[in-house]
Length: 444
Image (cartoon, rainbow, N blue to C red; front, side):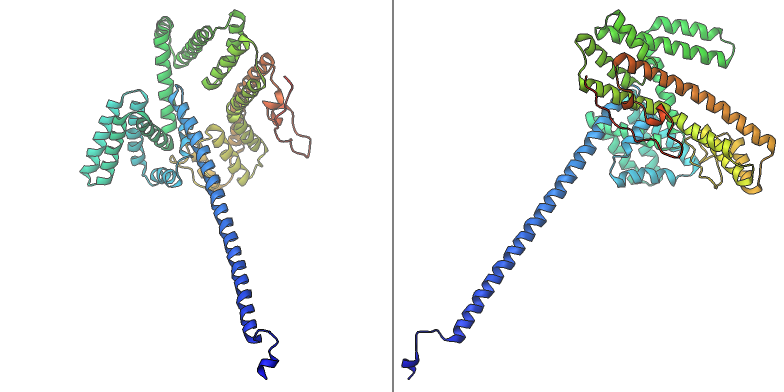
């Protein structure tokens, strides 16, 4: 019977099991496919993250290289060293900041002396002197059982002896550290000024002798300061003449360059000379114009920074009410106008440690107002009068910067909209805001 009943169909149970296995295989293949896609997506995400990280590292390294190149040139400023510290790994940058914050006042003075001595020695191409300072530092650290500090000093010595980028990195590190310590920026600026004066004196010995003779005849500090300024400008002009001649500028081209380049930042003055020489050889292209506009915009922004801050504080002083809180705001704004580097926060006690270059008499008045209430009308008026004097001096300097920029814009046929911020050209409409600065493309 079973043979008759067998029509060639497979056992339904076996067929079901095989179909189940087939379905399971398809499901497994599908799952494996999804897993593979997920793995591919994850790998692609990792590759993209690695690409973005590499691009960020490359950009950061390019900025570091750019700043290091700037530090190699004469006239590097404390701000350049502080900018470099922004590109350190976070743990290193924080270590420098924390080390300064945790120091007592006497420790800061000692640290400033040691750090600046090493930096100035390296910057003056005296690695032998820097090594002596570091050897003394290592010995001092060992005398108080600080072996880590001694070993750090000795590692700097090895880097200096290696020369090249290792030595440059030590110089940059001590430059950053010096600039970060209170009083360090002022010390670096004084050193840079002294170094520049010595360099110019070597280049122009006759002018230096004339200057020395005039200084001997000076009878007051004000007269000496005036002589210093006069000869600094004359030596700068003589150096610009030499550079213009070396670049091949003819008399008319040289005179135009001299009119533009006086009192400019060295970096932009060099860029301007490069473009002036190219213009003399045949003309500037669109990229040259863009380079000049970008460079001049940075020059204007940097030069007008102090005025913008002083102007904002002066408006606060004029607009503050004749009340206790108004007087606090008035004195605080005056302190910031005198010294923008002051780190006093409004409402906290001002001390020598955080008041920067603000005279002690001013922050003493501020502290009294903080606890005792209003100023007298006479003292309030005196603050306003002095603030107005500071504002007028800053405005005159700012106006000079703007007028010189206008000369360069006119001479080099630049577009004003690409140089000046809107607020530097015209006030915003009442009740509105000035439009954002934009680049204007011009068919040259």
